[in-house]
Image (cartoon, rainbow, N blue to C red; front, top):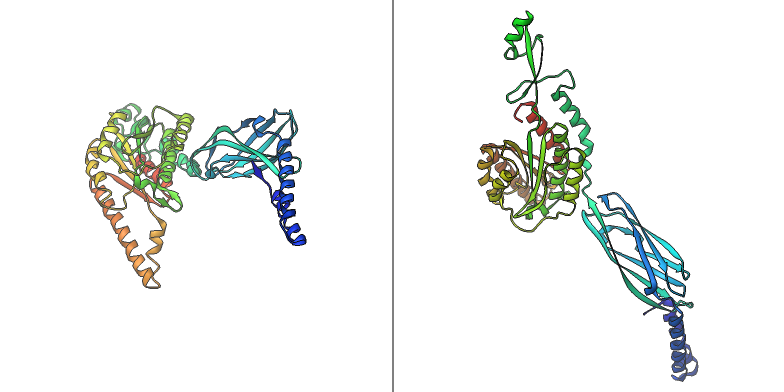
Length: 430
C-alpha cells in the first residue's frame, strides 16, 4: 500500500479542530473519518496484480545509439487501473522517462514507451516493473512489483570504422587495383610486364625477356591468406580509464578496425580476449560474420581485477595457429614492473611470429608536462615526465626483443595500428 500527497494533506486538516476547539476530541473523530475514506479508496482501487505485461525491444544496439522499448500493459481485472508505472531498468541503460502515468479500463491495454540510451557496454537488464494503482479519490494506492525480465545487449560503438575506407584504398594500391605494384621479400608473384625506367633490375625476368626480345619484369603483390592473431589483455590494467574510456574499450576499437582491414586484405583473423583464462574467442569467421561475432563477443566482456598471465600466451597462440602469423598484443606498457611478464615471453613469440604490441597513452600525462606555472604543476609535470620515460624504456626493450610497438591516445590508436599493418604489408613482411 502507498499513500499520496493528497492523503497527507487530508490528514493535516485534522489540525483545524484543535486550533478551533482547543482539545483533541475533534482530532480523533477526524482520524476515524480519514481511515474510513482511505479504506474505501483502497478497496475500490484496481489491483496491479491483475495486469499482463509484454515487451517489444531490439536485441542489440551500439553504444551511444538509442533503442525504443515498448511495454504493453493489459488490464485483466474488473476495475480500472489508474496510477504510475515504473520500468525497472538498470541506471546504465539510460532509460527516459523512468515513470509513466497509467489509466487502463478493465479489459483494455496501453503501451508505455521508454527510450533507452545506454552509456556502458554489456547486457543492460530490466528485471521487474512496479505498478502503483490509486483509488477513485487518489488518496491510497495498491502497489505490486511484477516480474518482467528483458535484456538489451549493448555492443562496442566501433567509431573507428570511419577510418576504414581510406585504409582500404591504400590496400587496393598494394593489391594491384591501381597501377602501383610493389616488390619485397615474401610477396606473391602477380604478373609480367614490359620494363620501364625506374623499375628494380632485380625484378627482370630473363626467360620472358628472351622469349619476347624485350626487357620484361615481374610484378608482385602482398601475400594473401596470412594469419593475424589478436590477443586482448583483459587484466586489471585494462580497467583504467583513459580520456573517459576504459583501456579495454580502446583495445576493442583497435581490434575491430584491424580485423575489418585484414579481412578485406584476404588474411585470416583470430581474436582472443585473455587474462588468466579465455574470456572470449572468435575464430574461423570472415567478412560480415567476423565483425558481427566480434562485437557480440566483446559486448559482455569487462576487465577482471587480476594480473595478466603472460606465461600462458605463447601456448595460447600455438593453440590458435601453428603457422607464422602477425601476433598483435593489445595491452599496457606504462610501467616496467607491470610489463615484466610481457618482456619475458616476447622472445618465445618473436622467434616464430611477427609481433606488434599496441598500447594506449594518456593525453592528460602529455598535457601535464607543459604546465609548470606553480609548484604543484611542476611536481605534476615531473611525475608526467617520469611516466613518459618509463613508457619509452619499455618500448625500447620491446623493440630490442624483436617486436614492434604502436602507441597513441584513444582516438589515434586504432588508425595507428591499421597503418602499421599496412606498412608491414608494403614492406613485404606480412
